[in-house]
Length: 267
Image (cartoon, one colour):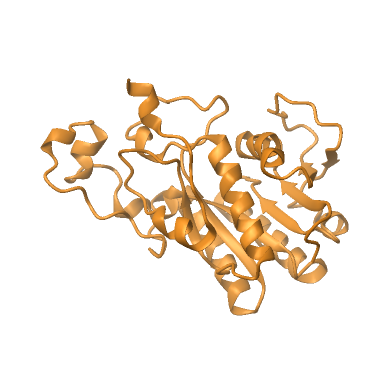
C-alpha cells in the first residue's frame, strides 16, 4: 500500500453531485489523489472545474462488469456512488462492484454510498415528537434534545431507496467479516451549490461538499494507518447546530471534523 505516492482513486458514478464535490475538494486535503471517473457516456458531468489529471472511462457497470475489473486493478481507493433504478437492478450493480473488488483489488479500501435514508424508519416522516418540532424549527418546544441517531444503528429503511442503501451496507459488513476493507457513507443532504433546499428538516441533514471530501480523506488516512473499522456505517453531515445524527463516532474513530453549519442560511 502506497503512503507517499499517487493515490489512485476509482470514482464509480463520479460525474454526479457527490462525485464532483469529491473531485473538487479532495485535492485540497492531499494533492496525491488521482481520479479515474467511471460513468456512463451519456451521464452529465456536473463538475465546474477542469482537472487535466482526471481520466474518464465510459462504462455501464451493470452490463460491463468484466470491463470494470480492468479499471479497478491497482486502485488504492474505490468510491462507489453510481445508481440505477429499479431496486433489483441497483442491487445487481452493487453485487458486480463488490465482487469485482474482491477479485482484482481486495486490499483496497471501498467507500460505498449509503444515505441517512438507510435509517429513515428511526425518525421519518417527522410525525412524532420531538422530530415534528425539529422539522418545523420550533426549537423552543423541545425540552430535551433527542439522543443522536447512533452510527451503530442498523438499517431500518423506508422505501426502495433506503433498501438499496441497506444492501450496500450489508456488503460492507460482508467485506469486514472476510478481512477486507469497506466503509458505508450515510450521506446527508449534498447538493451542487452547497445551498439550503426547501425540504423538510434539510438543515439537519445538510452536508457541504467540502465536508464530504474531508470525511473521505479521513477514512483513507485512517485506513493507511491500519486503524479503520471496516464495515462501519457513518453518518456524513456537516457540523449543523440542529443535528439529529451521531457524528461524534466518526470524529473519534477517523478524526472527522466537519467545518460548516447549516445555520449560516438562517442568520
